Amino acid sequence: MSPEIEKLLGIIEEKLGWGESKAWQSRDFENLNQLILDETGVSLSASTLRRIWGKVEYKHLPSVTTMDTLAKFAGYENWRTFQKQNTRVSTHQHITAGPVVHPTVKSTAWRKLVWLFVIVFGLGLGTIFWVKKSKPSIKPGNYSFSSRPVTRKIPNSVIFTYDAAASPTDSVYIQQSWDGRTRTLVDKKLHQYTAIYYEPGFYHAKLFVDTQVVKEHPLMIPTDGWLGLISNKMIPVYLEPNEFIFTDSLQIGIDKIEKKNMLREPMPPAVKYYNVGNFDPVSINDFSFSAEIKNEYSEGAAACQFSNIFLYTDDVPIYIPLSVPGCVSELNLMNREGEMISGKKTDLSAFGTDFSTWVNVSCKSVPGKIQYWINNKLAYEFSLPGKEVKILGLSFAFQGTGAVKDIQLKQGNKIVFGAF
Image 1 (spheres, helix red, strand yellow):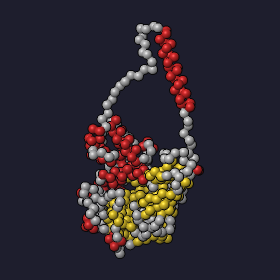
Image 2 (tube, helix red, strand yellow):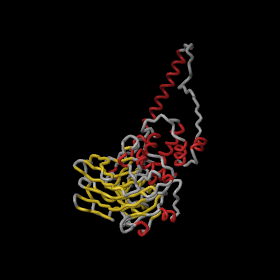
Image 3 (tube, rainbow, N blue to C red):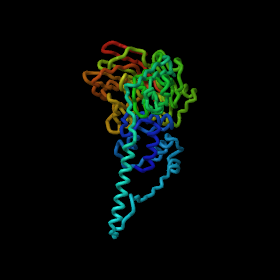
Image 4 (tube, rainbow, N blue to C red):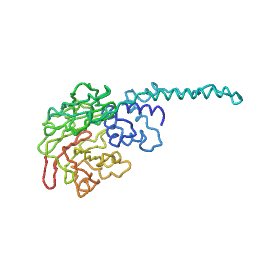
């Protein structure tokens, strides 16, 4: 990898604030894919991002389009602008610890002088390190952190209550979610901070001291029934119930999206339907879920008709991706450890489907496993986690627009939630 690319990736890593990329998981690249799409309007697949960051062996150079997009995400006009502003001039200087003695010089005095300089320099350097004060330890038990949403409507302000008086530094931060861009500096002498969540779901809020997480806790941002929105920027456009809720389905036409001044090109927005925190928690050890979906838009950049279903849990969400058959290579399936199974390396063709008619999508637990079914055919299965995990909400997302009906979530044989 060239030094210029390494520097650009370093700038992006610093912007994200997720720590060293060596420790990034597959889901981090999925999240980065969405952040880049939101900010630049260009989708760089998670597999492409993993290749660039060296997670996957790849001998070819990234395309100009890829580099332009990364440079734009880093705050530059394009890749060429970044290169011009970050030209590296390499200079090679030979540094010696003392006078250079020519091999033909046999003066013992000179040798003694050189060795004396090295010894004195070494002792001085050692003394500096010896007197240097050690960094104060940070003990998580000395801190507290909690939160409270103020409403069931979206957007939703959350009041964070914290005690960070024990911090040896003023670098105390609250991070709303996995996204490092939501990390905010707070006053360690105070005890409350408020933040806005623009989309519902299940998050993990974190309290940082310097770069160390001292406290974190789960945070559910619920909805008051069904919530519909159109997302292609930081703040989405929220839909009125009568714009997407009908007697027999959830759906919105492309004409209504255009009336919201949401452009379809170069990248169509995402339409999302949420229902979070409105039913009793359902254990994934004995559950079944099913729904009928249809993606009704395939123009331009939406040719793949990417569609996603999320079942939000108090742990890793259950994530079901779909597309037309020709685009399954770009799909990624999340296992129960939060790791992404790439369509580049795994046969995910069962998740490719024809959206011209209703598609039946289901998911259920069987002894020791969780299974994914598309049109009544087994598409994939994972092992169940060895811990109790509960489903708390669900959402449907479509690139462009889409429709949903016949939603049903069961605990055993009992229907816990159903709609349309």
